[in-house]
Image (cartoon, rainbow, N blue to C red; front, top):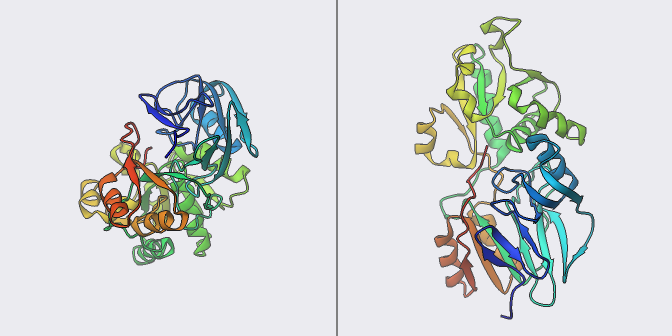
Length: 333
């Protein structure tokens, strides 16, 4: 294959022809950002190009001065000697795959992506390319995530079975919390849902973008009694469960929404009574299906479990290589 438009540097993936980085892991002069999770979207860059929603989310999380300059990605853009385009990734609100095309092979960098319908963001779309840069968060054959509606059914069944107990659902502040809320609404749950204060700004932003989260209320007992939350669903960042905050609820059922809840040891380590396997990443069948359908000349694998998918590609006669980038987390807070 001829020279590729992207190379790896200590800062991350770099495009020499456009003089920019994609999701760099330290401050750089020019950064293109796939989505607002903290391991992809960092503050301190000279200039940031991203979707309007990702830029808004970065401002909410880091303050208005998170970058020297910002630009909304709208349609194909020419940067130096390459053209870049942003395409929905289906991961969280505003998430995008970034396509880079120039004189050499075209490249699509997925960031994080999901093919399962997510009512809280735009759906993933396939983007033809010569080189496909894929995440590998759940790139092991054991990861075959169930229907999210089935998992929400488990939560609602538990609420019905234990009306005297609050159900505390651990969900990351950006994306997972709003997805759980939307799945509850789609299942017909129209009662108030109580949220930790750390989720308020991002939930308010989703509401402003037309994501119908329904009746949300603060999860506080400042003006009430501990028993007021009997039978309630309360959503909070997982870190809140280690604090005294969680002790204000009546004999809570501790739940956690994550693709990692397939791993029983992780659920036990977190003291999770009701694991909810709800993932915002492709699982093994979706990952292998995506590579098969796109049929790129080469697949680059990053931030995750690389070995199994590299072996699968080799068995299929497909060219693939690991990028071995560091600094990306499984599902960051």
